[in-house]
Amino acid sequence: MEKCTFCVQRITRAKRTAEQGNTTIRDGALQPACVQACPTDALVFGNWLDSNSRINRLAQAQRDYHLLGELGTEPNVLYLMKVDPNATTSSETENEYRNITNDKTNARPVESSAARF
Image (cartoon, rainbow, N blue to C red; front, top):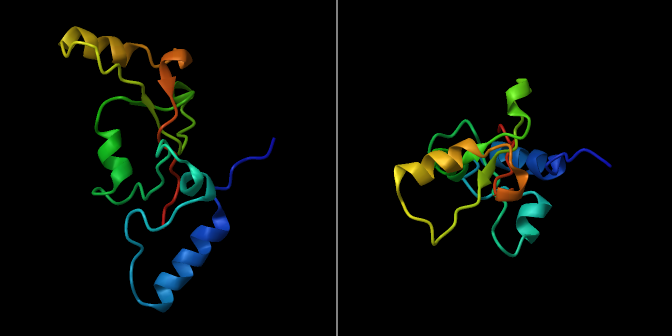
């Protein structure tokens, strides 16, 4: 198995084009192949350093967790817990979702991010 490079060639090309045009890369303009090909919009890629980016807004939803994050590895991939649309909106339910971060059957990868451009 190869480690994902988040399509470093696309990141480099976008950075070079932005530098040549004296512009910045807008949120959502740069996408690795997996994000571009995903028909369900389940993968999102963006700049963690931009507080207004989509990935930062999703991370603030308090459904996020990092796989093996408790080991202090600081991974760049963020996962969002699956939400049951039929669930009640009680604080009990919200606490339950926060406590199941280690149960991989109740979570699905939603967020993929590592660009720091």
